[in-house]
Length: 272
Image (tube, rainbow, N blue to C red; front, top):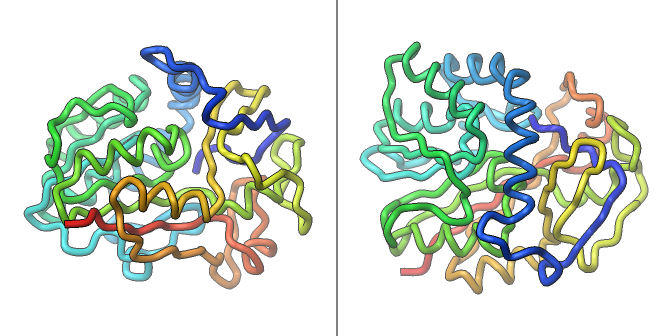
């Protein structure tokens, strides 16, 4: 999973963000992910080769989270596809996926894996906040960490609603908001059992040590945003680490993750 342990926090409300044609966070995250891309080749290879999809830090099986239900014959957009393994899982289930990502280097890996696995679907370089497809083009919009944490939710969630047909589904997985509030400022330190960040006004998190920008909303604000964008909320799954789970990521503590969620899944449906 992406590096998610917060360092020094510089939280900004959305009204303080720039409004350039390519926002600063898009440019900054592109540079960061192009730099990180070689570190994610092995994970992309593993996930492309997986027979049973699994999700997130803890590898929770698809049979438990059910993000890919009823996708055969459906048009799907993966928002922030990275190495595009989710799109590969979708294609093998009979869906017609399109992947869009902000990082040219990540897409290079995705295209290499397409050739290796003889699996073709469109891959676009672009920003999930502004997708070059007409209204009502897709039946499902999905993101595992991509747009879910790296794009401005006040832009990408309404954009997902625009792209979806009536009754279309939105599925996204990212860091649990509680996890973000409990992470200390030091690099690669696991969360504590204390709240260390403010909840009110939380949205944009800037990490000076690597120049990346993440977005995390409190649950109440996320509920209001989804509803305002035309979605009905179907479920919120706060993920518990499996008993005995381990991880290679130093900023996540399996013992902590048995008590509180490190990740969460949102499921919503566009109103008909």
